Length: 419
Image (cartoon, rainbow, N blue to C red):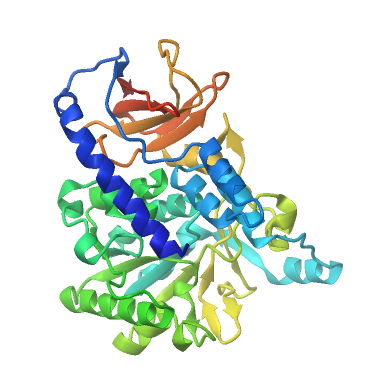
């Protein structure tokens, strides 16, 4: 099954379930009091449990679809399993550097703080483009960290590939100020939801640009570029931040996508040369030995940009294509089984007390901000746990609806105040 068909079926299943639960939860959604006693609720859990994902792989044991498994893990923010299954999909190999290569790197490459470097470079640009791996919550967390600085530098339009468009467009996103399950496919990932929340809170106008035509690589790139051009024409005095997937930020000539990707087509259509930034091609793998050896060899603790001895960014190159700036992310460490970069992105890592919970395990624990729709909203954080595990959620201060679901379709809700 093609990815676009997979996404379409995902939306159809969500729509079927939504109508069946609205009446059952209408009274609960109006409750504003702090209720710490768990209540049974009618709820549809849109995320798959680990065992469900692994069982899907076993159904086609001769040709398991590890890429779709990686997508399912990533949708609920499970970075470890998302990377593990993605590496199985692409059969990673051990990569090393020769002593000559190591000497060359030490003498010719320095690392600068990625956030500071990008924000400084963005001052004199009209358009910047940042890509992501669709299975990486880390990339969304880094994109979120740039938002306030970009806004302060004059960027007021945030164009996001992953937003649904056309007849599926979330027309209320900018007024509602938070995403819901129908806002997009990849946007149901908690870190993607937080990226959109933060952009809307800061004051960005968040817009889709995905094609609404029949999907085909060349058609898609051309139509996306036309959509960006229309946005530029609508907001001619505004700077634009484009957040895209993988190769869409490659400039120059390519052997695929009709010769040019989105970045190159934007330049052709508008005469504007975007500043392009890569997070994907040096992404962390599930095991250190699978990483690009540059990640393992260089010592750095924060997202960094490799520059030459003159301080100029070293671009990513692919045949006749390139991306202006590379962002290297340090190896992920885990704090109470949560990624350290996720913990740093929020104000608190909160241990959720489940001592009053009487429910069969495994369970998913999801936190929804007070005032947001927890019926079909996007959680701020999710963790799946078994009975002997502690639950830690990365949250800012505030009031949250904590929703708990298990495989048997039991659902509980209580309210938690984080201060």
